[in-house]
Length: 341
Image (cartoon, rainbow, N blue to C red):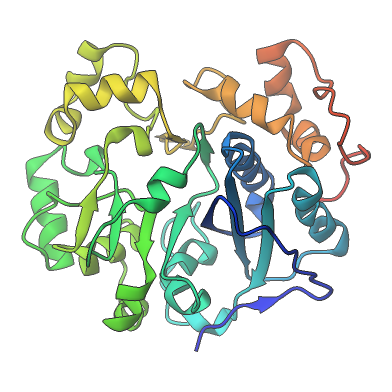
């Protein structure tokens, strides 16, 4: 089966059993280590004092020792976390069709989580372009019954009737009324294993879907998906500037309520930077005008990969903050020249 392999030299820490323990999974390739580090930083920075975070990282290749050490330094910077790095057998998805330019094979690893995490009944999955704004213990504790997953509806996929109907027909489901963005999910791993859902998902990777991994999870999850409020996956892809502007977008009117919008603006839980233009994806590290971009940069300055982030994306940070020096942090690791990547 598709069992992840621990990196060499991995030492597991022991925690007190008091408080709440949550499991969070991320998947990445070498190209997304820097933004992934910001996602993890934001997760740990916003975790409540009694929340312990088990963070599972799945990669195709074992990173160089310097990078692995930097990833493991989260355990030194945050006392209530454990980092569980894994590599994934590349043959586990040898039939996968990778048809979207900016999405690599690692994008499909979330489909393998039921067997990659055999001892867990559930896990929160996060894309590496997300930013956590509040403690996730409440999301992790959510009872979704026998459903396979919970997520926020993807408004941009229901915006046009004809396209939505074509996509639903392609996926073999009645409609897109439960179609979620799978970049933020609470996954019921126990139910998925029991119903052998992973086998079906892996088989579907051979199909050339328009939005490959997301289409697959929605195809197998139809009728077994819990819908979360907008605040759990707030996307600047939509016009968030005002309530009127937000609901002038047809997809938003279909998917969300006015109360959801207000709650998302007052107390967002997770920001998801899924913006895209004709020139490609737009992220807070390459477009300073995005909503919540400054929040992303504030977390970036606390990442153990800050030197590399500054080296690669520093001009954008300077445009926002007018400075290039990281925030002072007494427990920070040594800041090198940022030449790891």
